[in-house]
Image 1 (cartoon, rainbow, N blue to C red):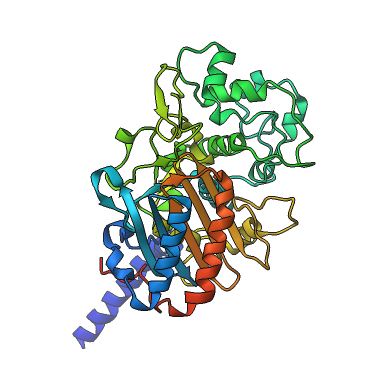
Image 2 (image 1 turned 180 degrees about the vertical axis):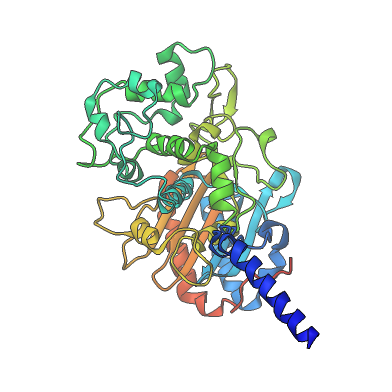
Length: 431
């Protein structure tokens, strides 16, 4: 009987303790869960050409090699994804001909203006966090870039009407796009060193706008440089750091980097770049040091392009990135369904989509990138298939090469699409 009363007493005491302290325990907010990160599977270290040496796709290989021969391309890298599964990844030709290095799917290449797609996704990540809205003003008292530096330059009050969306859609109305004109800017500003981001702002923001923001469009690399500055201001991080930590790594992309200017700046798994013989192959170094350089190695200051065109990566990781912003369920998206819809909303042939060049529902989504030494095309089709090709050689066609690359994609899809293997090389490795 004593034991029974002892047990009752113990229970009573325990209940009293819980009543006295339990409210703090029960009502204490649970810690915010850490974001779910994909396994750190480094695709570029795992993928090999042999994984896509498939006899039934020999015809596809012949088409790619014929394309390379026609356009005198030293090397290309191709990735094919279907419904967020990586089916095919292969390098063709030379990554570095002089050193006898063959192209593999693990090599990274400059992607030029495909970088804008990454930057646009970074903006959408911040919007999903309620850190900004694409309708927010960029300049002026209500603007994100309200720093005295910007306000001291701007004389045209119409700049105060520029929104983030205008920058994304190339509708801000800037008169100049000087990012590929370093020597001209040096001469205009009387500089004895290469212009930096602030110098480019000085030659653009102190002039009137070409048109009222939102009433027309003119492709602008400078606009995406400003978006990089918006990302820095809102996130509190340098642009590249924010993109890698908050956008690319969550998407499963661990080997994308801001590219360098010269061959000696390249990363160990980065390709060598080539330009064709002829007028314009050699040019004065962008820095104004008087040296004559091959245009793809010193013709432009690539890091200063920032979110407009400075990224390099592999087509396979770029496919992984597209899978993270496409709304398909195979790979979790890093942006909301609402943001996917905003990025891919289609108006007409005269209106740029957000980050994408075009998102015509009947044709799919496309993003191109071109400058000296590289050409890139991302084509996401309505049936869920995505083809990505990047070259390490520029051609006399310049941006026009994308049209022929797209024709190559369509021919390969028509004749060899059924032979693509049913597999997913995104998750085919044990960590």
